[in-house]
Length: 244
Image 1 (cartoon, rainbow, N blue to C red):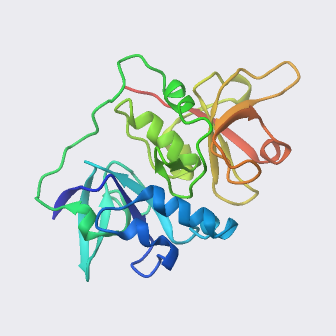
Image 2 (cartoon, one colour; image 1 turned 120 degrees about the vertical axis):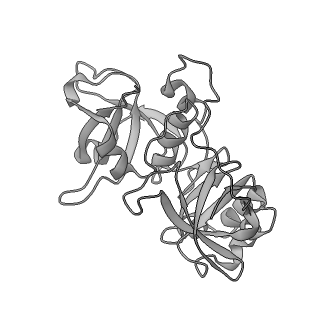
């Protein structure tokens, strides 16, 4: 069964049991994202940080889904516009069935919402100052890979949803040869890529690198800033999105 997201923003959960009481506004038949974020912030740092292991991503109105399973008001779906190594049909997870229009039709590919020639980096800059939200892909909040995915999707280009999948989908670029619009990828020793951001300037003569990204630690707002020491220590690669 196929369909599309009917709600403005539908949150994709790890399981039907994942939401907490403070997530109630996101589960309403008509989700109230503003009320949800207010509840998260009112609960202290654990509100947003507590989404780890609960939320995987968000789906936007009109986005297609493939329904894999239905259970008591919930649907397990795959999101084709958010490719993932976790499922061949797209990012998998659970969403309230009330947030879907299951009429059996779905668009094949996203339509560009920006004029031809607009760089993805320019789209990403419009998110500067937005609060970090784990799993976020909407104008209300994004995470690092959500920012990259959403910026490119506005141009009609579908990138994988998660940073480690994005790292394998781009053309590798030597770190000394990056240019604005390329992507930086970060990983700890022996682990998969966990963070991504846009290169915003060529590497300075003193080695300083600038990046536009959605950081979860420190100042949790989308920012364009020099790499912090812990970012420099975990920078492992760079890549360039190639559009046919």
